[in-house]
Image (cartoon, rainbow, N blue to C red; front, top):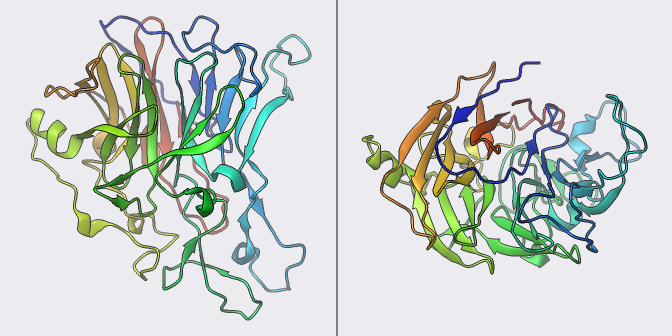
Length: 378
């Protein structure tokens, strides 16, 4: 397996590091460690969020029926495991013995299953004591859909092509009754562990159609969240109550400032799972924004918003003020050498020396059997 390390020294004031790791197999998608030196360090809390513990996200797994007839493709009856973990707080305080490179089975202080919050990828923590957790809905593991009964068994069937009556597979984006969907930003209370939909990201009143969200980060200066929309390419700024208080359009604002031709959002490119043009095995039909405006990772450092653009694996930055206003000085910071397969920069962090570390994630495959989740480079 190939690992790619990119380190960029910056002159801006060093922020405290919240370490992030991306496991290559990506059954574990995201991990944030709480270090005692950070402003968001947790105290004793009902959620189990303590100094040094980890918040992780990952694909919740697959459930197969007890019996499958001979000659029937098991993947056709595979569903998301509703009781599998989508987000966990892992206790790293007592691993049982001194570290020696061994596999350790740490206790899980909090587990949120797919039936409760669906699949999430990016995680952020605010600066409350203990910090609250924010998680963004994702299409990184695929967009499986269901259609009304076609085989006479009385239940909906898995499909590979969109059509009338199609719906997302249960466990993908959380319960509809809770207002969950592809644009969901979840808030998990740092004390109680209660999870709820904080915001539903869309554009001009139109909900996200399935491409879902990319990175999420907390801006300590403005006390806001920044969330990347994979469908429109917009970066939305939310207050901690979930209200949108700003919006940044790299395709127009960023590219224009950088001397490039603007690439505006094209509403005609939105995808719909009720249309036959949508195919679960072809991510290019899922409604992702064009590479020139598609954003994944976001991070705030030294008064600037850093964000990853799919086109050319570029990392850009733009001024981000304490009042939440974006500057007009967007610029390219660096271009990451590509890995062995198509991918995007899915996370950006800065260490205590101001060096940038990034993780690159493979593009979603849409594998029908849920077996090709993707590979990662760090």
